[in-house]
Image (cartoon, rainbow, N blue to C red; front, side, top):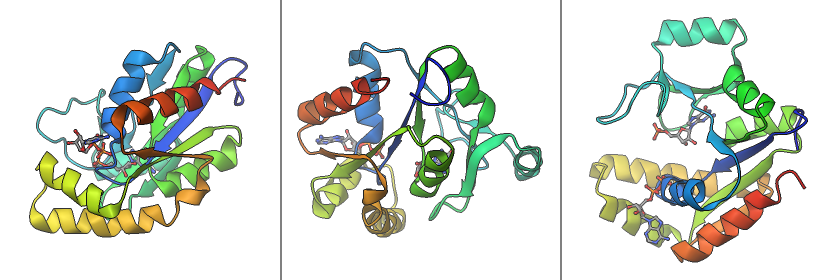
Length: 192
Ligand code: ADP
Ligand code: 5GP
């Protein structure tokens, strides 16, 4: 439990391609808890199919800077390797926690450290691939990045994997069903 009397905070990170989106989709369907995603703000442009207010709150750089100066973010960083700002909005988390929800943040390692400083009881989970070779194969199969972009993501992934011990739990996403079960079990410890 964190700061709110009822809600909990769950933080998930992991390299691009480690399976966070896939695992979270399963978690939201299978875990019988009042989970809600915190929608971050970002200065990057929406990708095709992304919806403002659902995938992110898409802000231009001036608006992001204004909200940062106004103290609207619990944490915000220029996420390494992305070249854009991302931040967790204070009101997204507060609204969820006050309603007794289990608020899920999908953020990077810098953001996780800042959240843990403010919410020491947050449940932090790092999703790892079975190996970097497997990560590369998955990114290639997903086929959503150019070769340059893929190389860049793999470089970033190596640095992220080096910081995995910041997290309270690590889930190896090798067998999907096993990883989903582990994730559910960890999430269900929230509020104990
Ligand atoms: P992320 O959100 O961390 O970038 P994704 O959820 O998009 O990662 O997963 C990357 C790719 O790997 C997707 O094509 C997904 O279908 C596939 N994938 C995810 N988990 C597994 C798994 N356990 N075994 C095999 N493929 C997986
Ligand atoms: P995307 O692929 O959506 O452009 O970027 C996702 C990356 O940004 C991931 O590393 C994710 O963890 C990080 N990210 C998304 N939202 C936030 C946030 O609010 N704060 C921080 N610190 N990182 C975020």
